[in-house]
Length: 207
Image (cartoon, rainbow, N blue to C red; front, side, top):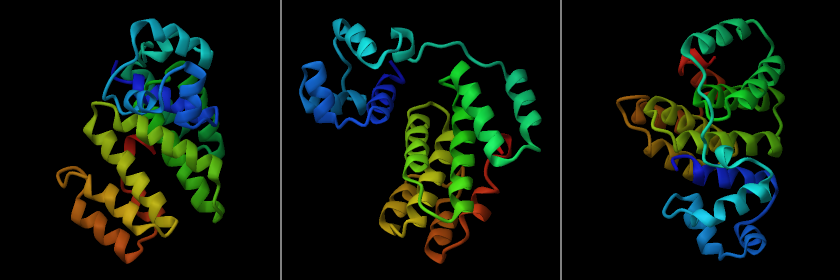
């Protein structure tokens, strides 16, 4: 059940539905959808095939039950894409997530590269930033503290780029000092350090 809430949220947002609209489609309350997505409660077992059918995915996909990528294959993949352009990396990472949709390392790398592309473009790209947001919130539901910190880092940088320092600092305050350095990151946000400089130092495995 670990990923169920985040998967429902991702599928709903991809469909462009509000929680209220999804509730109407499934015949449940908006509050139920909210509790599912926050993992406060889970859908009744009889609802699982209904939800899966609505989103046109399997129950295994809905439950996050997919085969895992072996460490050797993941390392070889990241080694093989190092010299590619950002656009080429994004395409390759999307392909890998088709095979390993719950691999948080591929998720983070895709989110990181999407964020880099938006930064390089110098213009706001709502669709790409929504994808970054979805990926980061899926990572936050994982049990990997390092990747969770990476997701918070990206969310803080994205909010800061939009001038929303309150939101940026909210993400920063969720960072445990032992991993990224909450105080250091706060200084970077408040002093306007270039986001590419900041993210460039984070988690070389997912470059």
